[in-house]
Length: 175
Image (cartoon, rainbow, N blue to C red):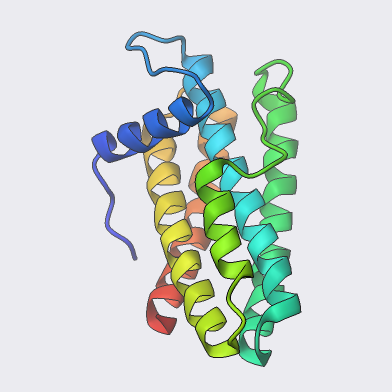
């Protein structure tokens, strides 16, 4: 099981995420803004991992394709559970903070992977990107599961966290 990371690491990542969306982290923000930032970060992680898994299905070796199918199915289910949770979370119109395209950092990572033609190099980079992405997701979900303000989203984070931790452990073993 992955060790819990200190909240300040999450806040720094969240701040970077908000800055990438031309927003700023301001102390004393209403809880809804923090919850929306969590949703945006979780949705971006899902979007990135689904896009990368779809690419791996097209470009990866057999082992990578098998892993990609599993990841794609999990992330689609997780994204659907998040959408269902948002219906009861009472955050208002969520369309403006759920991303539908990758941010510049993840677009760069995706481009690096897309530009890798050797199947072994592709597989190694795919595993490393998945490990890093899952580390980030575990950190975000850990923090929100403990400190999140919206009860429905906190429950979603608590339920989802063990799956992310297991997948992170798997990625660490493969790397």
